[in-house]
Image 1 (tube, rainbow, N blue to C red):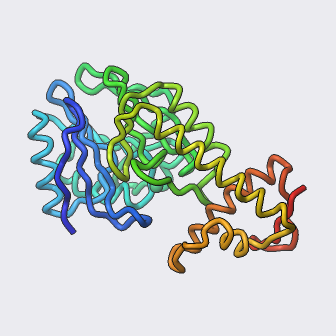
Image 2: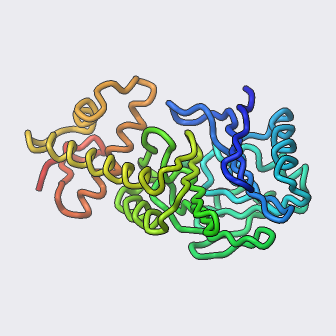
Length: 280
Ligand SMILES: [Zn+2]
């Protein structure tokens, strides 16, 4: 597995797409290297093999980084943290910041420090702000660089296609709120962990929201024909999904059903997660 070409996103920001084991159709997780005044920060290092470390070094060099201050994890899914150990060995003084609500999922040896919504991180003379954007994971954070109007978005959205929101970590209602919170920042650039950087402002955030509501509408339409089991709903909503990812499709539908049940629009019949489910 090799690292793809680094991309200079804007002055002070490089995207490094790293080959990771992640949810199809994606095959890479973007690490972002942020730099100001010779100080660097790495966001979501998903891999850290020897040749990847070389790519990190080259990219940090291209940014004029003299000091790697830390690593920020947007969340703790495996495809975002694979390079933490090797980077920490290479730069022993760096701090690992992770969402406060996901510290329990960090390796104790990282000595990770909890980040919460609104917390500011200095990078040289630049100021980055942690923005709480949960929904894809329990306590997912994005990073906002206001001078650049850049949102480093982790798995809040994907550069192309949609991001998976499913049980047990996912929460659709919370996710929709997070998209609105991120859109309210009015970003120019949205830098996701999977797929290309988006340069069309908040469009990708609005599209993600519309897509999620569209799925919900499809779910309700299917249920209008009568109670349906989870596999039946999956066939209706994701007819093309290959066997290997059926479980992910069903866990995504369950996250929607959970929202609709909380809103008392759908009821769960039967006794297991397979339902059936019915309109209220
Ligand atoms: Zn994730």
